[in-house]
Amino acid sequence: MTDIRNAEKGSIVGSLTVAPITRHTLALYCGASGDLNPIHVDIDFAKASGMTDVFAHGMLSMAYLGRLLTDLAPQTTLRSFTTRFTSITQLGAEITCTAKLAERFSEDGEDRARLELTAVDQNNDVKLLGEAVVALPN
Amino acid sequence: MIDKKFIGHEFAPVTAEVEKGRLRFFAKATGNNDPIYSDEEAARKAGYPSLPIPPTFLFCLEMDRDNPFDFLDLLKVDLGKILHGEQMFTYHAPVCAGDRITFTSRIADIYDKKGGALEFIVMDTQARNQDGVHVADMRRSIVVRHG
Image (cartoon, rainbow over all chains, first blue to last red; front, side, top):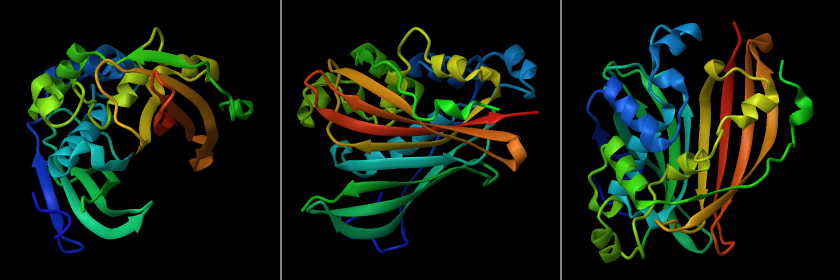
């Protein structure tokens, strides 16, 4: 992890690789998150809905990106966090989250940094694209 | 096609309490070993009154009610056909265990792409704590797959 205040624009300031997603991961996330949509845990429901198998919650990978953000900066400095879910995350996916410094700027009386976020699987297929704004301590 | 008359529809507010056990379970489920998210003493040392909620947890808390997919019933959309398209959070104040958060949601937009093969539902949600402090805003975009 790199200090965002001193990092060069365009440089990678942090990354995180998470253990491959299993059915057990999805069962735990289903219960812990309260996202009870059966499509993520019940293969019969998933097949009846036209999918070949269950697949990961997009919000699980967004939570991984959130872990990367709170590793990089205290959560109280997080101002916004946005992601687009660009493709379905399959079972077995090993997600790597990366944050790149897009710019530093001033807004609402504080110095801030905009980070570009990506989450890719082990084949480098992009799963999530997003950005976050964090305040930089003086 | 989803009836566009629902654009602007406001849902009755829902309230949920942030519970410590739930946060510890969420930390475990997301592989988060940072102690401030599961150990209250570590959280206090970091300056929080109790366990803080991680960045995406408000989305989960909003679903903490009898039927978190009630809006799909209203819009006559099949739960098996939806995907999450986009998610935005804007944070205004911290939220910790013990807080009671009230969520007020409205349908901001409904539109389609690819000649109706994909429809999109955009929901805006405002979150306030037990003292009426506006703690966050969320926007989620849901994709409905047809065919």
